[in-house]
Length: 225
Ligand code: ADE
Image (tube, rainbow, N blue to C red):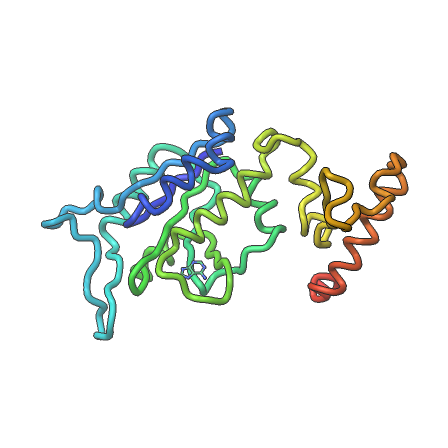
């Protein structure tokens, strides 16, 4: 998988991709994340990439020229399955969408900033718009990093334990059950006896029961989706 991320502040994301699970996946040859600084595609003085909005109003808009220059160059080099723009207007990211995107070969992520990007880029190039929640961020960079992480960890081999991405919260529509490690007893708090019974069938049944209980208590909405 290859993810090209276009941003006006790519440095915001560089240490995330340098130190997260994504780096491990990159080292294993499973993913390549390429950050592009939109300023490098400006032909203006001082590498300007934004301009005032037509019709007036506060804030600047990322201009069409540097964005299309960057997109056209990338698209002339390979085919992309998706061109994703991060915006509060988009489809809210859920596990199902991450699962779907983890099957893509090549994707472009566009991070907005300021008041947004020229609408014509959305019309001509963007195939999906994603929001990471109903709140407004200062830019799409954190949303791009969140989405990339949710996708990359699903690539087989990206995380240590092959099965663990599939046992995550949400994969079966339930929250994850509680987990414990040693010591078995700490200041009067004991690990549930059943987890130390060695009986895999009983342990599995207990975990499922706990997952259902936790989901009913904390996120009953997930049970009705
Ligand atoms: N850009 C600004 N706010 C955002 C959000 N909530 N999700 C994705 N991208 C955004």
